Length: 253
Picture: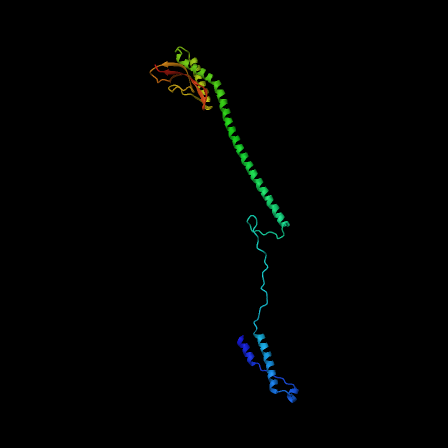
């Protein structure tokens, strides 16, 4: 742009205007008047050139984007936008919703704890009922077996008399003893199905918790405190003793 302005400035031709008075009868010096007009033209030219060469200044103010303000962090660390008007309906609704959420969470936690306690109570109740049912069953079996054992003993004694029967006895009596033997075996099977087991005695070491010594015999054939003979069989249900076995025990001679 500077060369163009210089070329324009060089192409400018000063023009002098003279009025008629000056041309015809002006008393002043013509050179002086021409010099003044030339000076005026030079001032005008300098003014125009200074206007052209003056740097253009941009008076526009830079625009600033008036966007929404950045969301402020909340108390819980989140960056959710909050309504600018504090205490407005949106904030009140948000606070009420959070309070309701906390209340529901607390209620759910209490219900879960109550459910866990109920399940634990029910499990304890179930175990207690099973234990009581087992104990009741064992007690009933013990009572029934205690009443049937004397009958079983009598049947066994009746069968033991078969060895002393004379050959002259009739066949009808022998058939009767066979029937007694069947009844004895059947009753013994019923007690076995109920869990009633005989107490091992003969040949075992004497156990005061299972055996009751009614006779002692000094002998060298058995070790001391060894059961030599079972007089009355003992029975038990599991670990519960119905009656001890009546035995003969060997002692040191």
